Image (tube, rainbow, N blue to C red):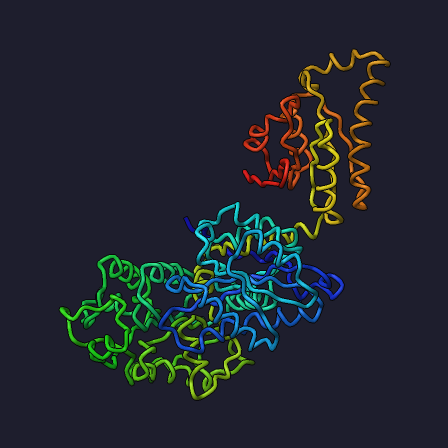
Length: 564
């Protein structure tokens, strides 16, 4: 279920960004960087370049700072092959002006070894994530593997910010230090500054493909109190035509789509907020099929013609609405622009948008893969300042939906403003040295590490009289036992340059004591070993099930994360 943001807060949480780091922070660091280079099979040639160019500034910064970069990306779902990844890699290398090699896989011993051996200022592209079934399932196992590849995780794929993937959500949560890339942070700041409190009148132009998802987003946008004018073109307008009893040509429009459109019309039309095309440029369905543009959304049994583009009258009326607006959001083409003869309405509207608006007076965002690909491939170069292929993510943001990639970055930003609280659950065994060494190397200067040792026995809160009755000799013996446990952990932490913030000796069931301590400290993470058959902390599952925070478990060979 998609989470809806509450009313826009007056203050938004800052996210940690790559631009906030200096050369010393980046030099010698291994950076895992997620980019988006996926394009549909029939996309305009310019679209891939538009997407790749969003990553160039971050890559230039990282490589000039002598960082070591491992790139993550995927191709379109219809292009599950190594060649597609290789082509993407070659094109990025050309745009970057530096050699980049692509690996055949995105995880495994070869990948781990290759990334570990990267030289300063060197970049490699991992294998196609589309071939990894755990990617779209947001598998914790894949996310943990990816997060552990780098010292720093950089998200430069804003176009995927609304999706749930192991490489864009799970890995961010588990990364040692996640940051937003330069374009990611710029795009988010642009949306916050432009759309959270738009200057009015606020004009929204929605085009592109007809889908239930796009209609539901449009319905949410129509519910905004500041949605002053909404122009609906492209294929999505066909649902409104059907709901209005008008002909839709050969288009297949479901009853569900028409019902959503009817709800939007009933809300906006009486208030004169909704504007549909008045005329269209028709096209023969046969010609579109010959060009490979029938994606199963047209049926010749309905008609032999398609409503392919907005007509001259609509272009004139809509153009006159641009000047009075103060905030303009345009998503998606106004016709089937993959067919050159049906791109004129979109190109004409773009020219009018440039001619009738001024950067000093208007705030304008133009977005969407197909639209930006068209405008950037046009013979007449566009001068629009804010052009982004991240159409779906921007639509979700405008509709008030939470973007899954933002929250873990915001949490990381909040953690950087305060030292994160780590509970180190000591067991009184030899595991404690290895556990403390791991915690010290992982959390370092950004954390306060609280050492907790629980001696099994009656709960000291429930039976205080039992422990107050201990003799001095018994208290001394107990303290010496505890000090030996803490001293062993302190020595391991000291080797990492860390000093424990507190020491806590607790009498209780071990799992109860650790959880209670984590609650009191508002801990961000509990670090614990698996334990042994002789160690009461071997009741690991109870800690995982009841913990108020993330649990980081150190097994015999590698660590595993459970998040309740």
